[in-house]
Amino acid sequence: MASRDGGGFRVKRIDHVEVMVRDIARAERWYREVLGLRRITAWDPEPVMIGRGGTKLALFRRAGPARALGAPGGRRASTRLGLRRVAFLTDARGFRAARARLKQRRVAYRGPVDHGSWLSIYFRDPDGILLEVTRPAAARSVR
Image (cartoon, rainbow, N blue to C red):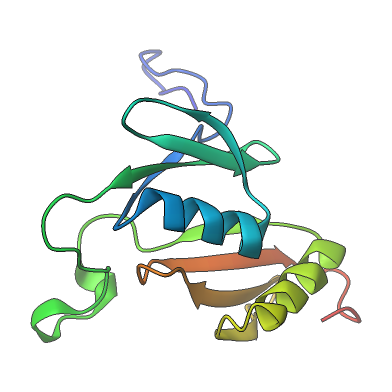
C-alpha cells in the first residue's frame, strides 16, 4: 500500500488486532475451544498472542469497568469510533466447520447472512465483542 507521493510503505497484511478482555485466561480458552485459535506467545504479564493461519489476536486485560462495544447512551455501535468487529476469512469447508462448532459450543449466532459475493455468520465472545466468520459465496450450493 504505497502512497502516490512515494512516502508510503507496502503492507503485507494486518499482523494482529488487540482485543481488550475481562479475563485473559478465560478469553484464551474460549477462542481456543470455539475458534481453534492457539497460543503463539505470551509476555509477562500481558498480552497473550493467539492465532491461526496468519491471523493473530493480542489479548489484553481491560483495566477498570469492562464494557463491550455496543450502544452506550442509545447510540448505535456503527456511530462509535474504533473497531466494530473482527472477521475471520475461511473457505466453504471452514465455514461449515465454524457453524458446527458454534452450535456444538452453544454459541448463539446470526446467519448465514448473504451479502451477495460473501456469506457471513456473526456472534459474540464472552466479553460481548462482535466476531464474524466469512467466506466467498462462489460455491453457492454450500451454505
